[in-house]
Image (cartoon, rainbow, N blue to C red; front, top):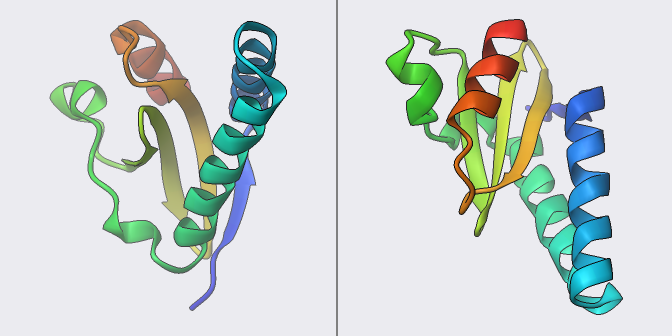
Length: 108
């Protein structure tokens, strides 16, 4: 089965800001590398979305419908609904993200 992978508005904004930051503070080539890696992770979600892990922050709150995958150190947090994968968060995993994750998972 093939799944459609869609980014929420928040995730699209995350990706744009992440690549913009890398391009500004490192290089366009580095930003392109990160974008390519994240897009490759999306392709994996297209065929195997249920192979992700449950993110620990939301899981501790009893929120079990979200999964995560990585293009290290970047975390991609998503939810599978029918044949659609909704990407909710794309963030640097080295940052403290407990508040961000909990806020987006509860809202989502």
